[in-house]
Image (cartoon, rainbow, N blue to C red; front, side, top):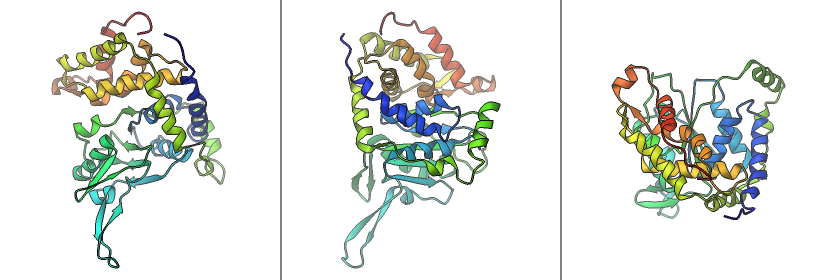
Length: 321
């Protein structure tokens, strides 16, 4: 297989985005990389961690780095589905029905604290996350491209929250955890935020919608061999047969893992997928799609721990995969 120069075309753009976001987010290069991989794969991101670690700031930093339309939805119990999708009303002047767009009619949507709104409102995002369109009163409206939902939630606060259903979790391309900074990183962060203006306020776009769409289209040029596809399928199959798992990864999950591995290769400057690309992306792509049995949860087993064991048990293909 001859190498092409296509993957290299995406690297300068991704590097520019990474550097811009790093002006705001300190020491979270892995999380930033995962967020950009989801963007390249036309996927949606669930940022899940304790309060105050920068979940919303990270999502906002990506949005401000792109010359795209951006809307933020602060989810609370009183937010209704029509606030999200839009609604139709009679235009008094013309007497005709007129569509009033909701917050999702934007290229980048931040669904902040998504688990604080009702299941009915949460489900209003199902169609837009899967099909890139919204249907209101029987009329379908296509969303602008590129389109990406970044949702945040706090996994430890259960008061006044509504856990996302399995169908909703499966529509998130990957899940990101931010974590606490080290002492050195926190000192750097404190220095940046000690002035009158925060770094987020000074952030400017470094690329536009057309550049993002072009980068997304490059993803299909990354070669995936039969061995690579078999490796992905084998890992996913193991999640469906393990006795400690009540629900394994879906076919949507296996497609997402393969696409994420292609994006990982693209960012590495390769036009072919390696087994390491698949192993690297398996945890963020698959772990949130798994549901443990009650017995496993009582034993303190976590989905990422179990998934890591399953990955280690699947033979790695030899060669380029």
